[in-house]
Image (tube, rainbow, N blue to C red; front, side, top):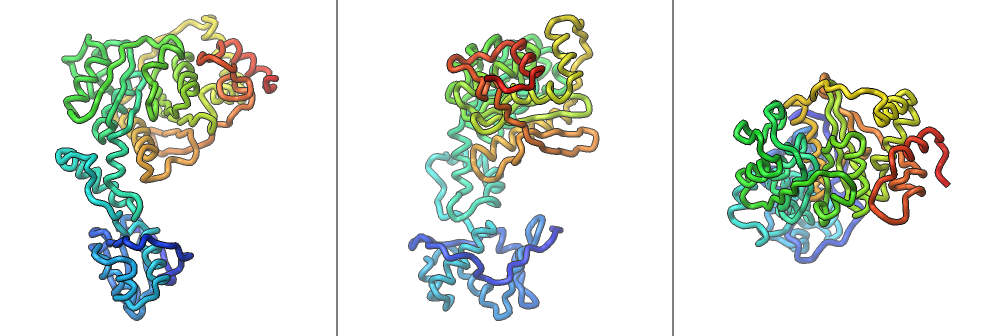
Length: 405
């Protein structure tokens, strides 16, 4: 309950807005619990800050006490002795600071079982709801959503977060089997699953975790963007957690998502650092934009990548540095971002690229420059077909640094 105070110098500072005549504003029970009055100030002490409203005559306190959900705006105005305009301003002020509940009943779109199952989700969403955005609507949006996860290594953990919070349809795409050395970090598989296809094992585990959702297992070796189109079609979001084939896997996912106009999140985990980023078609830089930027600003990396691509540099197996706590951190951040985007309860990170320092547990964000000559989303994009351009074309663009004509 620590933090600075958000001071509001008047009870009615907002530009007046017209309210719905039948609206019956109600103060959230939690806010009534953390409300206090003293020294002519009414305080709402929240988790990180205190909202303080000067109230020397007790007018605001008397008004707040009337907000029990039984009175319309006009009735509040009459009982509080305020003008209709001041009443509307007061309600708008409290709503702006998320102190009022949405005026909605429990929706029929959620069953009694779901209301119990997602009780704590609803409590969480209630702290973000406003008069026009209900906690129940957030859960319904999750229920009606579809997310495809391509790559069920670290992606299996993201799929589990999505299942737990109630995403209605989850599509899992992979071609590999569960291996014993996966279990140090892919902890929604068990030793009994070793040797079984990841799609089959994860579908079973997710359905055991949440019997109210639909899980589609797609056994697929991703060898082109076209191979993905049917699997991810109709998804609200795609998670690209694929690491094979090297260099091409994420490019296939990127091209397929751009072709279908589906936003996507990508993830990679190292020893000390991990990163994730989102690609919004037509808005942000894509995977090829990122590769171009890196190869243009780090020439040594361009040369190393070219040698590996041309097999002039032998492959070496140094193992996988994925460590369970680090995997949990980065995958939960992605799941949280997807939840924000699906429900609208909060703003996603403004810059799409997130870098996590696992040693200091700090997160920094930066932009992904959109390359005008990107062959996947820029002016150099082919007019038809979902496939990315060959790596050699990307290398040539990176070396030239000149926008494609």
